[in-house]
Image (cartoon, rainbow, N blue to C red; front, top):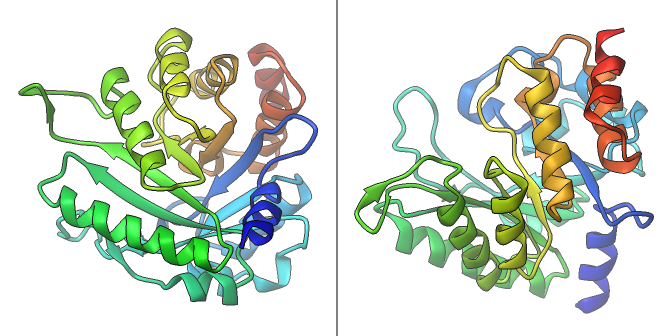
Length: 268
């Protein structure tokens, strides 16, 4: 199945620079109709017009936006979830099968593992077996590697550099084809994350911030440290003019724009 894995993985990364702009819009299954994803077809249309490399979405989001998809935009279909903000325990369950991802025309599947969670062992086993099934079908997997709990008895932040360095490598050891995780706050610390992980890493956005400059600076610095792009959502489509935001992040990642140039794009 090597050919399928290669062809589908190549759909996610621009051949000119090996980088990827993936826009995450899989939040509705957990948090409902957040500002920016109320109308799925409008957001997908904006992404297609901006020529982003990929979209991370759920089955229902794809179903609600079918008329706007273009063959040049890769689909990353989320396979895990199973909890909501209404009181779920934030425990990842398989909610879609690898075969479903193929039936939807996906180029990649997305699975989350919360390393350090009290259910860590189950999450790891679930992810590892799902990756095996995906690879048997020629389907690559993006593993969202999250770090929770303690390290050496000490609690740490979600973007703790040493914890992220650990979980990025742990995800690769499970067989993931690329890792989605937090930027660690500095090029120096993130370069160590990249150095310790043998597969490409893209950064997530996390909770929405109030600083577009900080979002752009994190993207810029992660690339300087060897990161391969983004898989971001709220910090892209919850900021005013989504089309300008998409053009700006495309410029940062594929056009080697400066942070100031990207800011000028969204501020005009």
